[in-house]
Image (tube, rainbow, N blue to C red):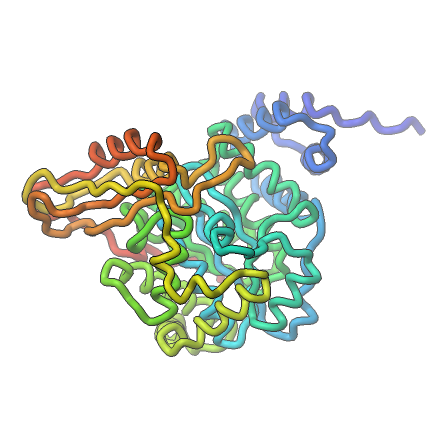
Length: 445
């Protein structure tokens, strides 16, 4: 019998480019080649664009997700002896809810093995935020990952060389090839990481609106259903919430700035402009507590989450986790003092009226271009770049009132983001109609 003809990556690219459905062998071989370094970035980028253009069938999506999940090590949660549950967001501006949710869930007695990502497109990344804490290590071995979870109930790490390496490579390339918004690539990216965590429950925060990757509601709903079907199909109880992303979530957007906001909340200082962040975090954590059997219903879970947050129990878990991962917790004694931008600038209202609208994606890009995002894959981010919002959509404003403060570590970066924000923040004579924070819940069963 003759040996099988090796699968050439160019053939796979051309078949997908021409709209054909790829075989399991083609997908598996391509992902293996990407991880081994045998397939160039150019060829990988070409396949990403072909998938962006033609999409994936349910079988192709399942195969791609599983190939990415098994491209490296997979976490074994069986030794923890607890219900494992996690949360993931599809990405928004100022979305730092993971920093509140994971310690809440741990304080409730569940285990949260959280594998997170870096900045992508106009949105920030949880790992970049955590790494502004001096000494904090996001690159743990799976053995150490499990030890931290066993000790304090949760751990927050990234895709190391051996953990979902395929997603680490594809994630960076998507950011620079215009393929971020594909619901199929988003699903494979998110679910490969989540399924590698050996979860029993998963709650997904699917953003919709001007600051989401998928701005049309029907596209966000499609993504939510793809994610839920992929999770449930792999034996993980999965729920998706479609949530509004028409303005930055909470008060701050930026790396250290978002950690600072969460520290304030965990320590019991709840700024009025953080109310939406606190509510969303409580609702998402509530679903996690319900799936894990701690709370009788999602609504009861929300109330339980708020109690754990406001009692200080979540903050104790947070401190424990940060110390176990090498972080210096002394800066939490005065997080405002740790914020050290080179320059700040206040953008003020030019007229009386109401904050009536903004392109939240433009706001996100302004934050990234202040230095909070990357110019090249793997490049550095500025810890202290970002913005502070002083008003929310629908707020009454008067001429000269601060709308947003911009922070940067490089004064040369200030001009363009300032112009972007000035152009996109709209003041009108009448207040806008705003969307509910939670738009829809998508259940698998």
